[in-house]
Length: 224
Image (cartoon, rainbow, N blue to C red):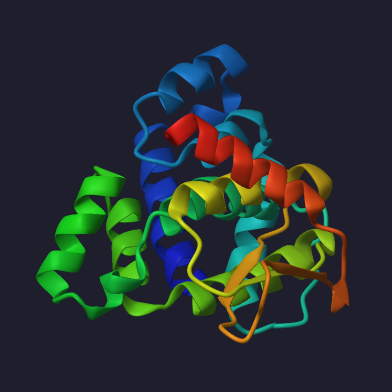
């Protein structure tokens, strides 16, 4: 999944730079203005606004090497930090909106639903739609966790519940965990054998999660 996304994203960035060959010689304000017209997710617009041409070329080389080197270090690499931000915030917010029944729907209905929540037909948006139709949330979560581990050594956060958690509550829980574990990507699992609520593991150890019930109560009060 990540390799396909990176291929499309890299192509779009290079096409943009081809249209603006003097991009890296411009001041930050001029770059920001050009970025307003780029069909790229916000973290990558910010990345291109800030990065030097030399560092961009280094990051581009890493992107091409990644497919053939699963052990390559990604720590403190600006591009992969932007990628991680995109996955753990923007993509996560869309992933949390997908109901379990989505994967029982026809391809046409899936596409219609994704068009509604993504609202774009850019090449990057289209590859995201295809990815969400091809991979389950569990598959995507695992791949994103692997990226976060390689880039920032983020912990594996696993949240088990006896039934599927509603999308709004997932987003609230994810938001709270991102405060405690920046760049992490909590994985939600349904465990019907659980009795009496949720169970949270961080790197395999059960942790206190009493704050989740405050989030549940707040979400219930604000939506009732």
